[in-house]
Image 1 (cartoon, rainbow, N blue to C red):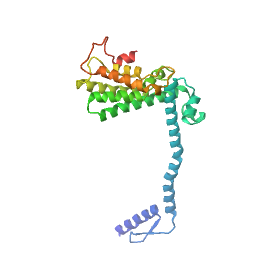
Image 2: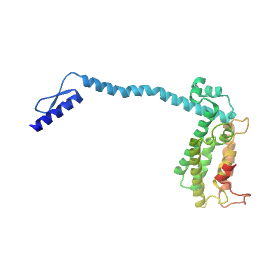
Image 3: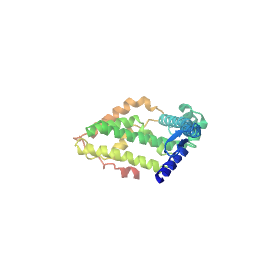
Length: 257
């Protein structure tokens, strides 16, 4: 009897959840035909669909934000960090209100551009490590890829007014420096890279050789950039053909300067 009562109670509990009726004494459940719970279940299943529909504007907003950052990066390279924000909005294909909704001032936009360029440059270093078994070939691949990311255009932007010590920027900078330091260290350990240079030398040369000349769109001098970078890379290979003046530039040297 106790088992039967428990079975019936269990069936009733199930009915409360599913909208079905428990058959007395059997523990079996049959549909009631009311459809109340089915309607509730349908309502629950409809909620995620409604959420997906509600998320679409957010996806559009993210795409607009990415277009703004990409346009700002291009214009900063071509005309410097003081380019009019109206021009950025026009290049991105969005209205001024959309730009200012995402980036209330120039400092916020500059922060995002620096973060994006630094992150993409780190990704290029990681891709070079994965693609090349020869450590010096990996370093060379990274240097040319970093030039295509217009990393040299960061220099004038970094002198602008924004929070250079923001945790996001510091974390991404550390990640880039660590990755490039690994490229340099492996190439030196393999005997392919001269030992009288340090990672700071690579970063300084890279920033100088890829910085756009004033008044000249960077796209027009790409062929010179990669040509001069290759000359620089040839000078890094062993055996060294000359003795370098001064001392190797370390990351600490760069931070102090």
